[in-house]
Amino acid sequence: MRSDTVTQPSKAMRAAMANAVVGDDVFGEDATVNQLEALAAEHAGKEAALYLPTGVMANLTAFLAQSKPGDTVILHENAHPYRFEAANLARFGGLLTRPLGGPQGKLAPADIQAAIERGDNPHLSPTTVVSIENTTNIGGGAFYTPAEVHAIGALCAEANLRLHCDGARIFNAAVAQGCTVAELAAPCHSVSFCLSKGLGAPVGSMLASDAATIGEARRLRKQLGGGMRQAGIVAAAGIHALEYHVADLAEDHRRAREFRAQLESAGISFPLPSPTNIVMVASADPEGHVNRLRERGVLALAAGPESVRAVFHRDISDAGAARAAEVFLTVWPG
Ligand SMILES: *Cc1c(COP(=O)(O)O)cnc(C)c1O
Image 1 (tube, rainbow, N blue to C red):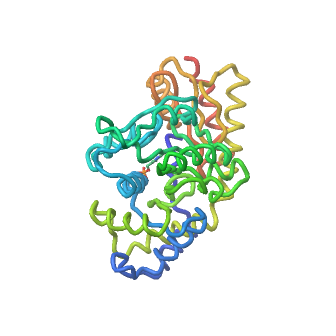
Image 2: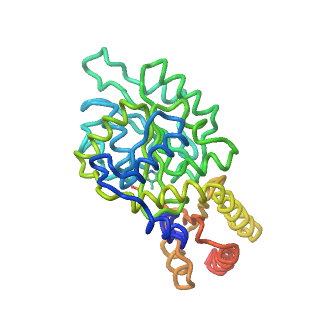
Image 3: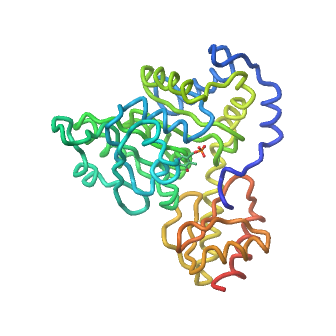
């Protein structure tokens, strides 16, 4: 339960990988990668998409393609690119980050509006990109609704800014709300998502955008060393995930809900709501709790000074979830 990145590829997924038609993707000749990119673009409702090794590289290429050194990117203070990407925007983009607060990892339109710097004052670093996370990671798997994304998109359009969505878990956001990824991405100029999280592929992320931005992202991917050769072997797992695993995310959400309800009825509390597959459990001693859980066969993550994170994914069964709840109840408050 440390993360939804720990899933094992299923037998059917491994078969799809073994049978994949491949070619050299740096020459654009890998039919399986091309198929995955077309499928991802369709899901995102964008002109084009690019296959990248990781979500970090997908976000980085999105920022680099839509800004220049000296610009500012507005994001949440708990956003993945701000907290957990080792300052890559500063290191490789020469970008200033402007972190904002907001409950559940979400940005409020009024806060974005107040933080925008215009390009006409030579003292200032002009804002060129706003980035939202859907769903939020440290925010407990919270999602933006299509209407909320539209509100942010409208103010970005008004201020002539690019809107990026770090949609590492955007399929969770779509499934939880019964909408499409395309609806959630429509107001965004670019959207990234991970195949290697709840969707259950062993590796890979996608970036979708307009054709010109994806063209630039393709050059950036090469510059960053992310151009892969017979990548169809792993891309086949991504296609399999998009074809067969999306609907199953609802099961992860149900298990997270049931797990939380079981803990809640025993008096355990939670710092955040759990609308998707992430449950943040309040803890007076996260490291101690995580160690005691591990001794009893449950792997969770200390997430900050006051919570333990449990993430649901397709390799946690109903029986596994029930067992985990039992173990949490023996360890809390301890
Ligand atoms: C995991 C994650 C990423 C990065 O994905 P990697 O494939 O691990 O590089 C980016 N953003 C969010 C919100 C994430 O949860």
